[in-house]
Image (cartoon, rainbow, N blue to C red):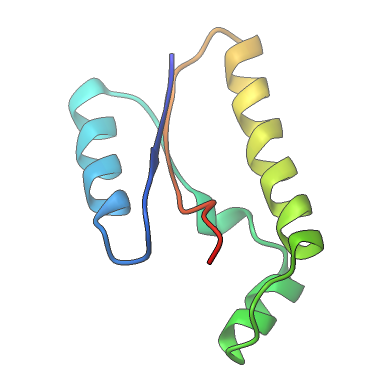
Length: 84
């Protein structure tokens, strides 16, 4: 089973996700960790990400979810994946 916790920045996704993963004994994945360096640089400069920027990031998260699912493993993901 894969659980994805979504919400806006500062809503507690990571805190809840970590606690849930710990309680279930599952691995926890922070969606922000899947951003490529170029996205991280843009965000650090206050530059909004484009849909094109987000596409690769979301593809990386989806690939990790598919891998876990294909291996019959579970995991908890925290991911904003929201757009202004």
